[in-house]
Length: 561
Image 1 (spheres, rainbow, N blue to C red):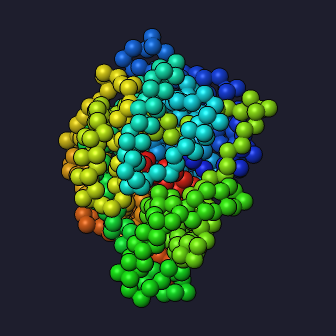
Image 2: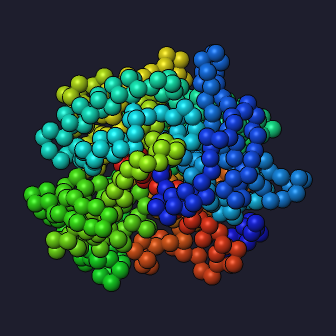
Image 3: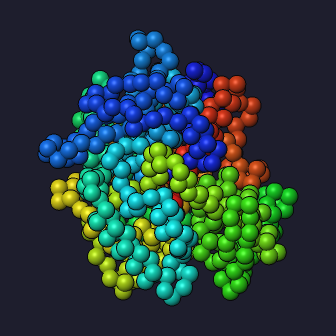
């Protein structure tokens, strides 16, 4: 039993419920004057907000400034017990740290400790930070563009790859033509790392305490490589292979994708027909059942008309729903099984709703709403700006794709779309940090966290990154899904808290089980500690809530991390 004293009471791109909550507690960021210091004002009931001026180009301040939207949930302890700030990045790239932290500051305190300020921010060019990066001039223009081809599997047809390649070139040209503020070439991760140091220093500290997930892991590693003497604590979860990222070749990311899918088959067979609607007695039979259904849908798409919209459940949509479910299997597998069973009977409604967002509505009478929904554009600008230029012809990309497909059956989304999106990118900066993303000796060891079957940031990538930061710790969570946030684990939370509070790293080879089961069934895939204490129950609930708020960021777009 983990000591309950470690869990003293006191973690886009939002789900519809959280988005509604954020809107109901709206804060007028544009009315807050940016400053070179963190001038906090009350916001969102129990938070503090500030807009921090940072140079677009740290080597040439005359270029101009960006104004970062920064938010914090303050520590709740005496000055003597204060542990300083922990900066949190929810991933993406392009995820809004502001929206992710609201209203979940208390849950972060329960997991990490209430002696810390929990601080997050919208990276430069993202959401409430200004200037904002966008290829589009209105929300309506963006909605029309996205509706034209989303979702599309690169396996869907003979012209899927040329079509995706062509769209990427249109987006690249739009970005170059419409980037009137010149923000996009300054959005690269090295500058975001510099911004983290600036935020930390403005908070009165010289060394960074940081918790980053998914793309946030690359950001944390970048910081450690650039400022190895400024590391107080850096915990990165769902670890991106930096070399793969900088080369726009994320083939390694697909290493465990098929293993994650296998947990659906294994878990469904173990759960039984009462808990898994897509049940067959053995995992191979369930796999064959899914293959047959996919082939049938490819031949004959199924129409779906719902209260939230209408469209076709075709091969692309079916494949994307399955792939997205691999990010968050503990919550997504049961409804996926039900939706697949319904689809076999000609009913595509449930499966369509698993991916379909609320239809876009244009409130043309209200032009005062800040234009902040730029996550997809920000993601492309950051990823492609970080990477070496991708100059693939259609033929060259097709060859890349065919080679990548040897790693997993699902490279049509994350791996393939990531690279093809950069083929048309035109906005680069000559002095970006090219690596290596490594450091022989950081001022404090990093803690890396990985899952046993992560569909987009596999353990293979985490092992490579651990080798680039000698002395770092590696914690493995025994679960499928993307990042440890996919399932509550008191064991994982224990090591998180130990790391931040005491600087303790897990012993080599440490593996944590999760306090959840696939399909809600008892199986050898997961385990649950018996009779948790009241404090542990509070932490488990906090972990579930943090996982729910991070989920839309780490699984919001099929090619993003």
